[in-house]
Length: 148
Image (cartoon, rainbow, N blue to C red; front, top):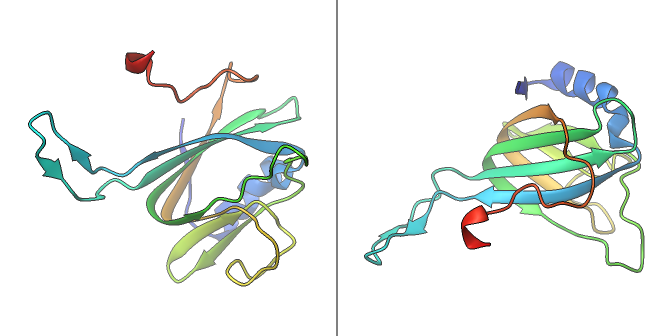
């Protein structure tokens, strides 16, 4: 069941539930723009969906896999850590800014736009979340079975 994060109170309750994503990792993401090219090569050139889905796995026995869905995506700044370093999230934070809700994979920074270093930042009009069961491990969850 999806639950929405609409305000600071919802964000605080959710982040408390997942311990600010301490000892977690972003497992995978899926973006759907809404734009496409049809079989006759005509184009529907509108990003009318702009949905980013993110799966986060946690080292915790409760709420181990969380899916976040960011709708009306405004931007994604993705800064994956290379394989020479570990990528675990130690803490993270939601911010409300200019009518948007933003998430950053580092909670120690209060200004999401002017922070030193490279962190992943997602900013959207709406966010909702749910717990996923049976989704631990390295198997790809967002797969297109038509292309296998």
